[in-house]
Length: 150
Image (cartoon, rainbow, N blue to C red; front, side):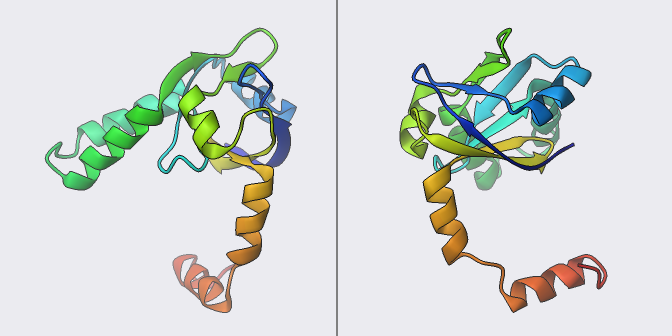
């Protein structure tokens, strides 16, 4: 399970070196293949391939006629690419996604999101985080979802 925030950088060749805390987890699970994609082009999702395959199986059980499913598959396929981690723990972020999300040779943040990692341009993420702070209403909704515990 991925959690936390680790700073990183996408190098000039478009490779992300997995932060050591996250690399230890994928090494322990013997994962070397990933699916790198996005749902909005603003950030990258880095899925260990076995987790992405679970997602695909889950989606496959749903009706392919659902417009939202078709939209999700189209977007994640457009930005998506299966990649292999190299011997130095780096994975290639697809060019189209690097450009759109502002990740080319930039400081980034890698957030653990449970089954996958999210990669953001650090400056953009911090600017959005400042604007989109958790409100009292958000915290109340969370408390309801969590049975009163935050």
